[in-house]
Length: 135
Image (cartoon, rainbow, N blue to C red; front, side, top):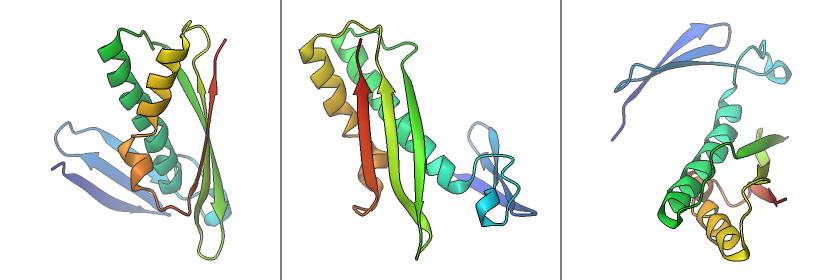
């Protein structure tokens, strides 16, 4: 079990520390929710976690099947919903151009991405729109 410590800094800013590594990140409320928008918001981190998790799980599958994914990018866009204020949709584009993947490799990577623990942890009402770009 990982331990994290979060401390409120004031002005809608929170500093989070990953206790094992000492790595720290700061969140800031977005401009549309009374913040300064000078860093990732908590909901930005949720969407970032989904994209990073997908890339990580795809990387595990790629290593298993001898596929080189170095340099693959995911663009993430967050869509907020109201009442209650929450993430309503996450739109992701996985850019695999230049990887020269055959149909089987594409299927392996797309199926592995769908098993990302972050995506599977999201409420079913959160729309997950994932596009894959090839060549």
